Amino acid sequence: MRSAAGRTSPLKDAVRGAGAVAALLKRAGRQMIDMEKLSNPKKTIEIIQKNHFNFQKKFGQNFLIDAHVLEKIIAAAQITKDDFVLEIGPGIGTMTQYLAEAAREVAAVEIDRNLIPILEETLSDYDNVTVINEDILKVDIAALAGEKNGGKPIKVVGNLPYYITTPIVMGLLESNVPLESITVMVQKEVALRMQAGPGNKDYGALSLAVQYYAEPYLAANVPPNCFIPRPGVGSAVIVLTRRSVPAVQVQDERRMFRLIRASFNQRRKTLVNGLKNAGDLEYSREQILTALQKVGLSETVRGETLTLEQFAALADAFS
Image (tube, rainbow, N blue to C red; front, side, top):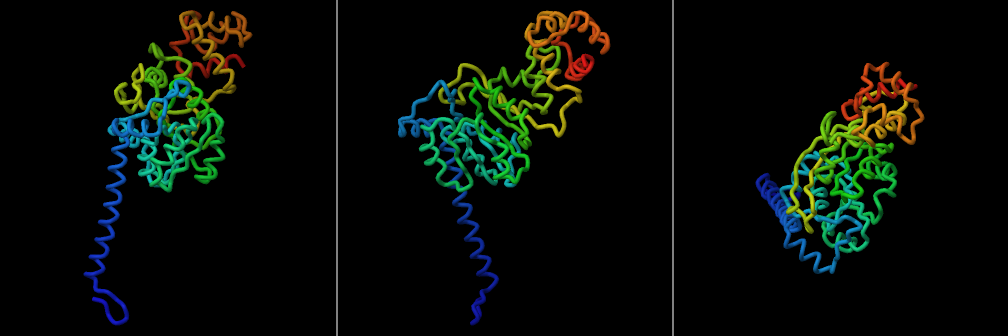
């Protein structure tokens, strides 16, 4: 009970506290309902029609409309309230809302200027989201991480346009961007290539490049009916956790990747012929055979059977 001095009783304090919590939960509940509606196909169609939005093939636009998949992405990315998240390709803001609920702050980079007014509407309730109308390949991500996260490693999440997946992913991995992880929706075939090992039909230069910088994990397969419009191929969510140091030590990283590319440009040929025919390599057959002998490989070996460690050793053998 309050005294003359203005104090209240413990019971009234508890009641007021419970009321405040209830109001907070009610507001959170409304936000969650809105979020679920936005991931509902009917709501997505409503927003698209209301804003007279037309999908553009040049941007590879396929909007995710499955709440279960969205929840899987947030869980796979391990987003917490301590995180600053860079989202690539927010679309109408469906996943952005999920990220905003889970993270401390979100910067969403969208190339299509026609989506900006829609994002302003769908994200109006979130004061921890910044929308950047720009091509992700032109964004200074290191500067953004410095401004928004004090230069600490950031998490990247996105539903990537399939035609530009590799430039985006490799641009992030090869740069000096402080990066903790990349959790992205990509074409299923590409996800399988990223995590493939020697001898697998999906194994190639992309597999080795990704695994040199990161540890890949396929978190979910996503069928075409989870998108509007439906893509012609299956999709997958893959998590790339950035390694603190590269997977192997090599004297000349550029030489190693030239050898890798040459090995898979003509993957049906032996490694000797693949390297000899490569335009950006100037090794004679004798030099190639000598290098193979140094690392204990047969002259009939094919590049698709070599591990990342063997490619590193081969690169060093040419030095």
